[in-house]
Length: 411
Ligand SMILES: *Cc1c(COP(=O)(O)O)cnc(C)c1O
Image (cartoon, rainbow, N blue to C red; front, side, top):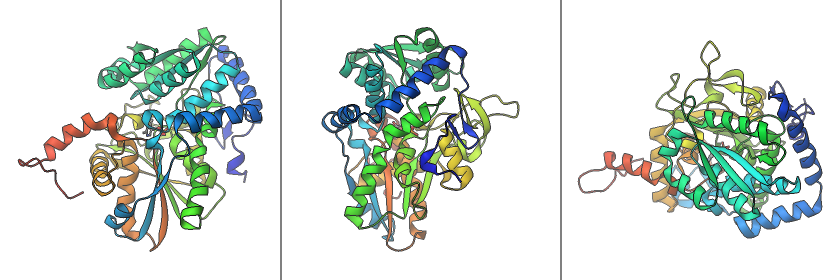
């Protein structure tokens, strides 16, 4: 079988998934992007520039932290390490990709970035990179999401970006993606479309993976130092799949390293109540690529639901669909309630408040930790910090709290 590390093939496919399903007008721009990246990734000057930015501006390398009290709280069989992407500038792994793509856009002579955003995290990362390079920036965001994520709308505007409300469809992320592609069709000469996850037409799934792979490359070095060997298990949350692929990719050839991707189970695995695309989806085309997709029996895209806005998307990166097909990684779902409990667990055992997205991965780890082999080494991808979710957590906390104001101890 083709080596996982060498994929996608020249047509942008990961097995049956991936490819390019876009309007004719952007085909040339995608080909330009592919060629520009093929040259840039081999150019020592580009690599050096990106590396300095990641180190001096974004805060890489991020620590690999041994979570002693968490490990003990989960039964003490597994030694759990956290890859701390939450400590990066702007609070999540998304800056790795935004800086990479912005640098590439400058190299291609573009003067403007556009992006789609759901929760606003990718919009903030793109607006940040645009400000840093003096590029114009426009972010498309569903009107409903703008209402729910007002703080990030303000952040983007403060950073100088224009935030354009999208009023079509369900006024959420998938509609914002459609609008961004539509805008790109008419502006490709000056504009780079900065996609925020390992989704979209070729070469984006590869491009974004390459920019996020730094997570796993660092983790591989760090765990060898810390534990003296490779990990037994990697676990990360999957929305579009960029932080998970970023962690997994450097270990793809190490067959003994087990990988688990955790999706949003929302309020239950019934249609419309979750965003567990790999668990419940079927093959289909969305936003320029073939992958698994949550759809009804007529092929209409289903609405999704998750307490974690960053996981609330009906599609998933084609490389994950392929990993699942080949059995290289396992994919599972965890619901809203367990994710909330996991936030509290990490906050109270380690003094780290995670974002709701990686809390899904932690919740699943908490479930399986007592059954892992004694002495197992586990790396959990902590993709972002919880500040953005405090409001959501507060609403649930008040409900769970007793009169004296102390939250339930049990998680
Ligand atoms: C956006 C986001 C995610 C989900 O995106 P992926 O592409 O699946 O990584 C996960 N965690 C955080 C903190 C995010 O902001």
